[in-house]
Length: 308
Image (tube, rainbow, N blue to C red; front, top):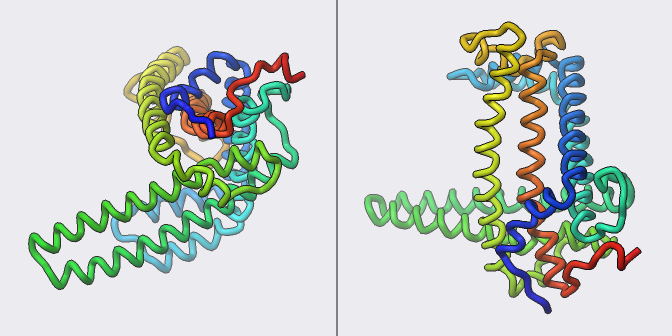
């Protein structure tokens, strides 16, 4: 089995951005229009109810009965929005995997909606169920550990608590890394592959972990810089339209009670720039798994012209 460079994998998102800027721009625009349509749907369907639920959930002592009543009003909305979210990110996942693994499949930003994307929906759903199972196991372990700590008490109890927390965290990371190639494997093999990633990554845990950590850190730094630049752009645009710095912070707060309150220049600018940041970070965070998989199966990069 071929190997891969964790450093190269961590920088794969930057390579994609440099070599396929139009594709990354298309992904950012797609995400912007998707979130804009989602916001309009939210406002039109449950705008006031959602605002009331948000205010209630952030209050100091929310009434559980009122929370449950408010949640009932937005429940049907969530049943529609959650599947839309899964489908959109499945499309985006496949676009990124396509740019790395099948760059010869041209199109608008490698964006498509077909069997690859529907298989990716299934992978995302299965990984989410596995994540829920991990959370359940963690909660059971923490509960049992809390009882044990209560028996010991004092410094020994605190030490046991730290050891248990670290062990549970490491276990969760280990499982997630071992299953992290399920997406690119499913896309590349054109069949549903989830647990196949477990055996495939048996000897690649540490390189994969290093690549993911480095990519996350690099993405965090870049996004932080983008946030600073975005704040300056939003402030300049707001002041150019007659606003003041004193009123800027109030106006950029997303108000989804009405369309008129939402469709303002600061909000739309914030939405657009935020979409660019989310997509860029997503590219940096997701692409290492694709290039790592490509390296592990020994394909390396192949020039698109040679494959056509």
